Length: 438
Image (tube, rainbow, N blue to C red):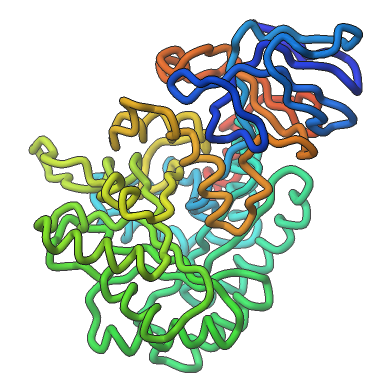
């Protein structure tokens, strides 16, 4: 495998010398750091990382690739996506870019077009893109308004099996929480979710008897051994703050499973006292938070003819300071909720650094698309560079943060099991039969 800055050796055992690694992503090896970056030599043998050595100390008899101080990362984790929604923008765009416009156009397209064949084509297009960019683990939310779960979850199970050697997949039932009191509907969704190894989810908003709805959701998850992943407070309306109720419900129900919340936009609209109270509760409850900076900047504070006044994202730094596990992710891709995107965590990371100010310093920021989301998703074996781990690595020509964040890193090399993969991206024309038919 060749890129403009290097060529991988054609050998089963070789050394990547003079590599620059984000120190926060390296396990069991330490070296002097500059901006959180350390120098090392990596010995790769039989598809695994055999040794991590100080730079310049790899054995002389090994075949070597000199990275000339280029960065090496572990593969990415994209923990909040919508692979069932992706890539139908050309079929049904969102004419005004608003949240309500997105909801309506997704609903209409789902009713009209979301067969198993339609979802498979778009879902696989996203997986091919993610794999080419270097992603190893994805969690997707699946719209679960009946009868859609009976189409989407069996298809997801098929794709999870087909892709298991390339990308590990998890799925969340994105159900309308209004259906929770309807036992027949809710129990059917829970049964389908459990049958296919998923999680329970939904989008929270102020509803009558909301606490009881949360209690029933938590009890169902507990009774069936399911974790929870919710869309929370995706609004600029400071009156909507269901995040606090979720933290209270987890504690009240003594729920022992994992709880993840995404978005939490309205948290950034609160006064300091309220924000601190809610963040402290989230930390105490052990809830993890994922921010979706690209999609939220696109949707939030969008009014015709007016410049947006805020960035739409949650209080990321304050959550980190409180000890909350935090990550960023892609969210939607080329659908009415977000017109753009390519399932590329480099783009997500680059934009998150700018939107959320994850820089100055950047020492530990690389964790937000690698090790932390892997830990949140229960896969701490992914997103780290460690001796004995698979040589699933991404090699970049960039040597320092400024170089890394100033270009899209399109010339990266993605290694899986110590070998470079074919990084050709799928052609949008591949979707024409589906999009034109719709």
